[in-house]
Image 1 (cartoon, rainbow, N blue to C red):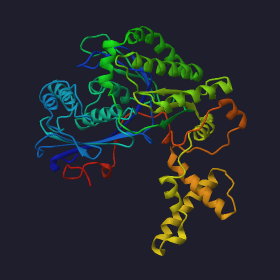
Image 2 (cartoon, rainbow, N blue to C red; image 1 turned 180 degrees about the horizontal axis):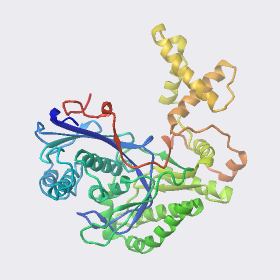
Image 3 (tube, helix red, strand yellow; image 1 turned 30 degrees about the vertical axis):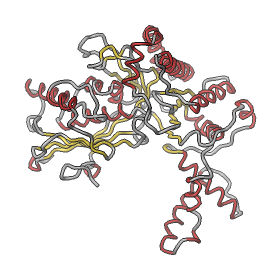
Length: 471
């Protein structure tokens, strides 16, 4: 960084993690110390990530933050207290939790003679800009990715190395697990100061290369009851939560062993059982907390019928605090199961999606200047048809229909490619469920991925040379 510019800037990305052994309930609200350990899988940032740019300058008059295109109120009393005083326990990415803990860590290192003396002053104000490439606050662990990204970016800005998960934990508990890739446990710890409540990588992202993750987005809306409020109520009112804390330690051991042995049968069953118990705990809370909807329950039913047909656990579901399903599955079963999902939750064909898809092939009805652009879109979909190894019909009406349906499918399936396959009538008759159109908005196909990354390309900064969000 050129110090003559009077501004320092870094951009980082951080991943979403999805727990297979859930964290629910705190023994210390201020330090965010959990009542049980948890374990998660880090998802690949090619599909889901938070990106954060942090800039610091002596010319900045105040700390400011922009989240997903909107500036958040930096004058929140609790936020100001955190920036002035001590470890934060409020909201940034719901509000700016981490600059002080990182600043305190940096100050401690400099006082002890560690660190680079040429780095910026800790007294410089910061501008922070952060975006997610997935729905925020919809039960897809957006806060975990966001907080992890902020901590990592601030640490890189100040030239810090070492254990950062303890800091990330103090914003959103599960953010500590997003500080690592692969398979990660968050140890609950026993110390009152929380210094032993940190994340630890069990295995790297390369350990289980065939494992895939399908995210079935049922709703991108913000969940009605936030995790923080839900946990507090559960801790006060749920007897089942107290029982849960007794069985999680053994479940953690079994899960770690299953991951190390790549034992999908055990991994899948433990994942589903823990998800079910988590949501049972939410129902046991008073008043009850209901995150799953009717579509969520139908997905659960579909998974069990699918597994029962084959006599083994081929797919496993888990649900965080929201209706969206996360499906763990081995690579060789992805194509078929996606087709099964599409059969029982077919995407809408007669609404906006179909209208836009048909626009791609109505070349004759548009002026010459735009015809080439539409032709390129049409050609792209035709290429997708051929790559999917589906026979391309010769009749114009059938071509139109195929392109329309594949355009819809293109919007319905995101992430890693999925091949089109047929679902046997025997499997359909075994599942025996009615289909519901548009029950699932779209599917994201992803895999296990690495932890936070530093972006080297300055063109990807979210803040411009003036320290404000790029237009």
